[in-house]
Length: 275
Image (cartoon, rainbow, N blue to C red; front, side, top):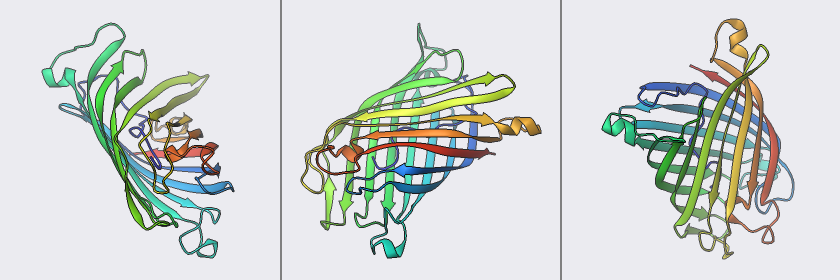
């Protein structure tokens, strides 16, 4: 799961499940304390991303593409003299809503809607490992009835294949259980409109990796607190900036005793423009 585990998050998602809508944005994240298995030093990353997310007749969709540029601590395959590694990573999810399909509200108690989520994650990177991640995700989803914003939970299965350029071999992992959740909560702090959003995921052991190491359960969460600064210039929901945080435990399923750099805990600066 090199750079994502849940659908991309949006600022402008409406709460009405029957609405057909779209929110497309470009964004930027920066952090100075990223880590990767096998790398002892902290890695600085500049990350640009494009996100489109919305609703359609039978559900909702979310697609995101990250372009991640590391400093020389995570070098290209030619070594530190070649500069930092570059990675393109895309995440996509499509959720089919039971309420939209049957044309009526099916929620009850704490549940607003439920359905089925299918998705993918694809990634390539030009470091020595030469990642070629290919993942598929499928499972039932619950949408909780929260008073503002949204909160969902998906439980299911995830398949994965990858490439180990160091060993010169493709890797096909076992199908693993997978749980992911995403949330968005808008609120105000005095005159400032804010949005707290994020995702978390847990993926079970998936067999042995490309070095023959038995993988273990992996946890990833990424969250952000963004201010709607565009609202002060008469353009609400257009420009956001704030802080983010990412925590990744047992990155790629690698146990902590197997390699350094398997835990990331990094604050980030984040900004977005929504169209």
